[in-house]
Length: 229
Image (cartoon, rainbow, N blue to C red; front, side, top):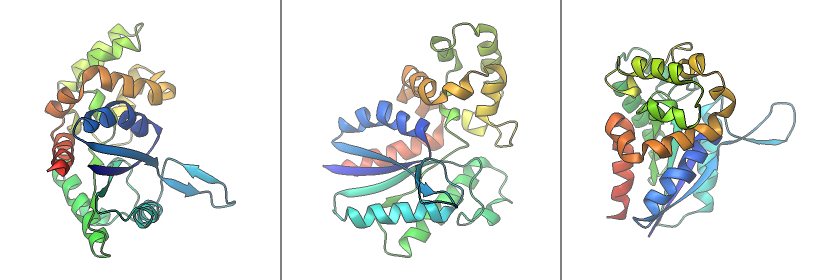
């Protein structure tokens, strides 16, 4: 039995893991626990969960969890967006010259892995979503109709936009052209409902379809599945 401890960027990723990943991996006797990144505001000691503006915040959270769970059966992973990655992320500056999204995300994951391994943390499996969570639900935009019935024409526009890319993971990371911004442009309500609607749409699409359309995501899932071996 493997325990897979996952640090999620926000509530949408947490809900996605709870709704789709936990049931899938439980069948393989890989049991996932999810935590949101824990950080504090600058002016008081109140603890906040979700969101991050520095790599140091993430690393401190991960190291605390690793120290608390030293079992040989425990592994650690992340579900973080490549989009708006903090500037102090290992290799961030060097990655700016890498134009291909898949090459960039793989380079950054390797830099992150090296950083953890350099301090003896060899149970870590980094994952950055290319470019953000919404790439997964753009695997089949038709499923948006189950949450946004009144937006048929807008959903058709999102579908037409998606087919212009070889994969939803290739949809731009630029501020106004990221997957979530493109969705919100057509369906403004998604912005306030993404935590609930996003994981529901993902469940309707199904893990197999998302893996088919999003190869970097698929490689992560397959790597985690091998933990049972």
